Every structure is written in structure tokens, then in C-alpha cells.
Image: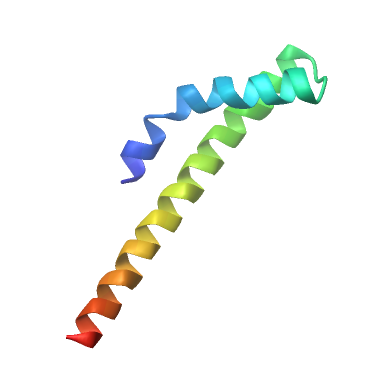
Length: 65
């Protein structure tokens, strides 16, 4: 799951750069630096949320059965 989300890191970089550079008027260099760090953090955060929701859903199903 984590590998799947981290495979989208490059795409996430460009989305974040577009938002930070165009909407927030940061220089391109600063926007790219911010995006490189945020892409890892955001993608891993989403992966962890997804993993934890799956496991909690499975526990509920096991308890009910």
C-alpha cells in the first residue's frame, strides 16, 4: 500500500508546485523544495490512513461474526 502511494510522488510534486507557485506566489525554487518534502509526507499520511481504516474495518467484521 505504501509503495503504491509513493509511486505517485512525482505526480504529487507537480500538483503541489502548481498550487504553491501559482496560488501562493512562491518562487519556483522554493515551491519545488516545499513540494519535494510535502509529497512524501502527504502520500505516506494518506497510505497510513488507508491501511489503518482497512485494519479497523476487518477487526469490526471479525468481532461481529
